[in-house]
Image 1 (cartoon, rainbow over the protein chains, first blue to last red):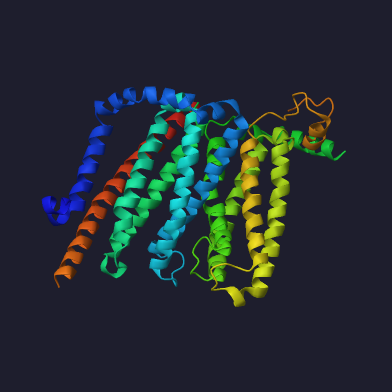
Image 2: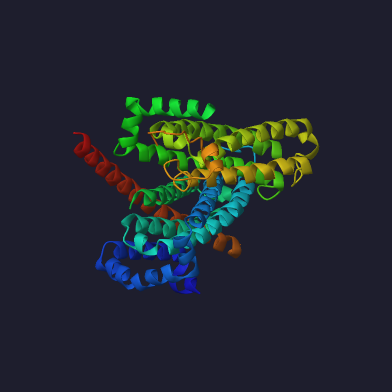
Length: 194
Length: 190
Length: 49
């Protein structure tokens, strides 16, 4: 058990280690090295069934992209409602527990839709996005968002909310809004790059 | 006759200074388009949550009327922003947009969605006190919510398809497409 | 009592990790968006004078 080795601040230590690891990875040659190593994978992506369909039929790609946007709308909606309740903007007369738990369910299925359609689209334009820096910014933000949501936000908000410092929950809500907005904005930016 | 009217109006808009400035701008068009797409998260996000609540798939233990009432305001704010940015996008490229089959379909569907929303709200207000706390709304309300989800999905698909030039008037098209797109014989602007 | 202490310790750990993560996120994205806006301003000045 990690707690036995790392003590009572296991989650904090692991969070710190992940943050330092991500920063070291992002600002050193390790990033370039991994980027070079994944090129064969991106070349392979274009040869898959998804890649061939995406490249051959523009209509299919556009429909999948539209479903990606529907998923984005749902994800945005669930984040706005969930974090809005924490920040005291919406449904202030409904128990926060109810809103947080129910919004999370919508968030989960929206995220699954986004990941599935995103993978399809990535296969269709794999080598183009491989050379796009903004695609990698989006993946970094997406990775950070998923890790933050499932490893920090969800475990914290599963606790009794009265026992949590309200400033911490507000900081979590604001961070969540920032991350998912950045994922959406960088995703849109991909469309303008090449 | 109507198609020529629409075409002439679009050409008149195209000749205005602001239309050219927006169309040729370094960033402004991109920002307007990005705002239009990203505001989906607010407008359609709230709308889909309301529809999914009626179908029993989201927030089932929150009263339906409360969901509809509280999420309506951010939804309408989102739609207002989308309406303004949408008009701006049309104004930047008026001729091509006005003669796009996808744009025309999208506009028709927006009217259909508005009518559906009006009927949905009336039906909901008449009967909500009897089923407000139920996880799923009655079948007529669920039908309205399902239609709303379907129509709005097609609106988004049509919006995405506007960028494709398969049915543009400057290419050879079938008589039906030429009629539906409103292509004008001998037109010089596309 | 022991279980309650353990629960409180876990909440404290989760809060501390949340503070660490949210501070990193907020600072990182503030810096990121500052440089993005800066680069857009420079490009606009270059394009339009």
